[in-house]
Length: 111
Length: 115
Image 1 (spheres, rainbow over the protein chains, first blue to last red):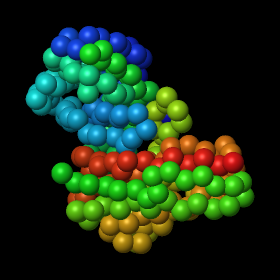
Image 2: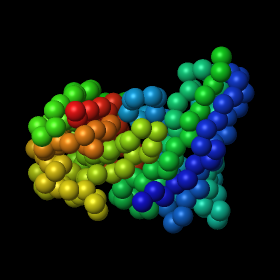
Image 3: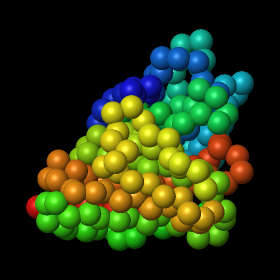
């Protein structure tokens, strides 16, 4: 069964704008990860945030984690047309547990 | 970064035939590999976890006799869809991890179409 639920399900923005995607989950986690998937392709790992971390940055990406609310957000700043893809959050209950994916968010960045 | 390849990238087969999909870790030794299935515009559903040299662990509802998984070496796992039917048509993605399980590296996926 799916653990993460992302919202919105679809997001369309103009190039240069920021994109914020949210993920909520149900059970306690060891870490939460965000992945990107271009149409018809495999997944690319973007960033991992551990349960004892609150915020992480990687280039134009900023991820936050609120374990009290069981939620995470992924912010992409200064979006580009190349950021158009589906984005998934995935959680791990333990360090060696399997990844459980959310349903994904489709991001469209208009040039 | 770590690279995982899949072969073939797409395959079309007739109903009743078997199809083998390969997953290779190109620049690291994968102690564990995972096989996922993804329907159009949906999320990834884990099918099974395979460890090198041992039997795969299948998720609930996945038929082990239908989806045969072999992890013969630290760089290769195969998924064989036996007696394929149209409902087996899907996007199959593998991933691999090295010593730690923190980051999974995903292959590019294989599109299977069963006629």
